[in-house]
Image 1 (tube, helix red, strand yellow):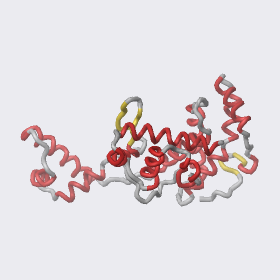
Image 2 (cartoon, one colour):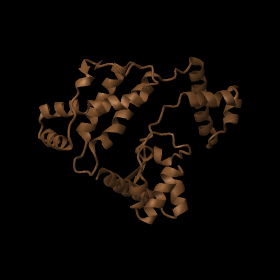
Image 3 (spheres, helix red, strand yellow):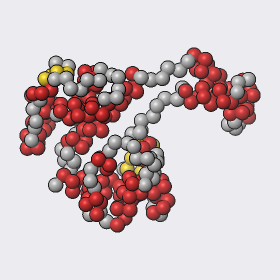
Length: 259
């Protein structure tokens, strides 16, 4: 994937403008009033952000022009949904939006094609399971399903797994007291391979400014890779409380880093 090309999708990347924070604030004020010209200027002024993000996907075989266009879609979505009242930089909000749009495109374009035989096996197993539940009023085991349809349980497990739809890490699990918990909150990342701002920035000073409880939660979540459920059990509070404390701590850390 050639990322050193000067022109991408007809845009001369060498001549892209840079916007100051003051210019961004002024443009957002105009955008809020429905000024389309200001919106176009803001988009153009943030195309460098899109370029920097698509470099993360340099190992992909996708055409750089295609990735740039998809990244621009993510940028536009970020502009249209950004809340200027929040104490967050636009780039902080836009980066995950752009990355998410590109990843969604790559996932949809490179989905694993499931063979017809695997699909047939999966559907037979599902149909048998439903019938057995109606007859016996309980959920059958994989072994029982295998005996019913004459297919090995290993094949059934593989077939059912193959037809599962991918689930986004940002898929909401449930909401409690106004706090939404997502799939990513339930996942433990022991190796911390995900690219995120916690790893990329030096946060030692920001972490020190948190109170003891928030600091402990950030340590458990981002440096020990524990899920919110695991943290809640260790600290002795609910998962919803962990979520609130975590979000507040991250907000305070972002605020410190932006000053």
